[in-house]
Structure formats: C-alpha cells, structure tokens
Image 1: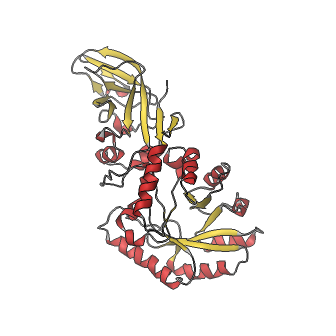
Image 2: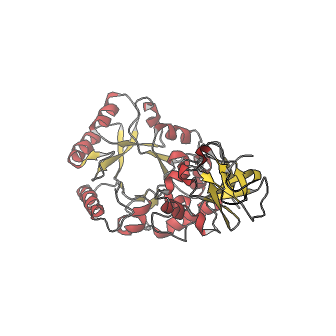
Image 3: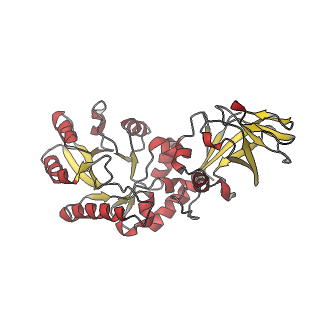
Length: 361
C-alpha cells in the first residue's frame, strides 16, 4: 500500500478554460510547470496544455527544459532561470527560449558559436531577484540587438506583492515596467508581468501573456477562494493498521500525545517522506468521507496516526489529506491559512514515493 495523488485532468482542462475566459482577448496563457508541474507531474500536465492550445510553458531550470524537450511535444519552453553554460547547446533548439538576466549572459552568447537563439530579457522592476537592473536594460537590449544570432522576442518582470492588491509597491513596479513598454512600443515584443495573483488583481496589465501557476492547478491565491477553480490534486493515503489504545498511553516519537480515553487509532501509510508537513503533528486532520479525523502525535517519515474513534473505517481504506472538491476544509487555501503557510509548499513537497494516478473523464 502506498499514498497516491489523484490528478484530475478534467479539472485541469476546466481551469485552463476558466483562465482563458478571464484574461484579455489578446493575452496568451504561459503556464508555469516548474517543480514537476507543482508536484502534479509535468509529463501529463504539459501534454494536456498542448492539447488545449497552449503554445508556451515556463520552467525554472535547464534540467526542466531538457526533460520537457524529451517529451517531443513541440511546445515552446521559456527558461526563467540563468543561462546554463553546461547545457549551452540546448538553446539551439527552436522550441527553447532563454532568459537574459545580465550583461554577462550577453557575453556568454557572444563568446560561444551557436545558432539562432530565441530570448526574452528579464528586468528587475523592484523585486531584486533575477533580472537586469532598470539602468542596464537599454544597454543590454542594444548589445543583444547587434548580435546576428539572437532573436529578442520578449521582455518580462515579476511583481513582489501581486497577491496584495493594497500594496503600493505593485504600482511602483508596474510603472517601471510600463516605462520600458512605452520606450519600445514600436517593436513587436511579447510583454509579460503577471503571475496568478497579478492576473486576478490587475486585469489592465495582462499584456501579451500571463504566467499562470497556482490557479492552473485549481488553488486560489492567498485569502481569496475562487470557486470557479477546481483542485487538480487530491492527496490520499491508505490505512495500514487499526488498533485500540487505553487511557494514558502515548503515541509516536517523543510521546507528544497521551490518550485521555480508550481510543481507536488508525496508522496511515504516509509521512514527511511523502509530503505530509511536520506541522500537522497534533494539529492537522485527515478526512474520511465527511468525517474529520485528528492527527495524533508527531508526523514520522512513513506514518501518521489518527483518531478514528466511532468511525466505520477499515484497513485498506483511504483518507484524504487535501484536495477533495466536496469537502471544503480540505482546500489547500484553508489548510495553508490555518498553518500560516502557503499552498505551494504542500503541492511541491509531494514526493516520488506518492503514486500519481491520472483521471481524464
């Protein structure tokens, strides 16, 4: 027995169509499929995206680029990270789009004899992570323009506070990016600024594309549950053993739970090595149908223990940790809010020990 993540591709298609319905007519979806498609398995996810007419996906690492190329889906791949010198020939592929983050990237391309390279320039509008500084942008654009083997196709940036519509910093960054667009508006370039939060909060700035991530997988952005989105992942784990403990008996490592009555407990075959967060210990819940079962004691590597007193449950049955569309409390928005965390952590920490089961009906 092993835990499994039910990946509902029908729900994925629903979310794709919903996002298409809310973005501007001339805006293209550029879904983010980094980190194994947020734990959902990029192989099946990218196939569906291609079937639904998506022309470009985004990833963070050169290895992710290569793995998607190996799927032979003929879909454009924007590499959001720094140009990889070790895999420099990869950028010769007509489906790969490199990101220029600095003048050093320009020098790297110029120093190596490559074929035509497609690229987007990332500009730091205030988040101070990747991207060239505003003061460097014009020089970098000019230098790239003079290279015969480079096609500049787009310019992009990233908002630091896109989920917070009240943040004045968003306007600061948007204004910085708008200044660049105004300077180069005569050129036919792809401009993109917004991820999921910004896509919802700033519809006037959808521009050429939106890099939708969390919403694609059916999870709303923080403190805002969008009922039009459907969770794509349902995380289930099997009951390995059921037993009874008496009042005063202890459960788990470090004996952090002591029973105050005779209790029916179930050992669930899933632990932190599968993606169950440690903070669920003595505070989290699993769900059996509509029944809420508290987790007892610490989360261990392979197991959690739950109180199933009074519940007609048996060994081999599966409980849900998150993602049951019919049980509101299993929403990752609610769970992450309760634990002062973020939904991304739960999805991306689902390990390879968890079997992905794909449904498309």
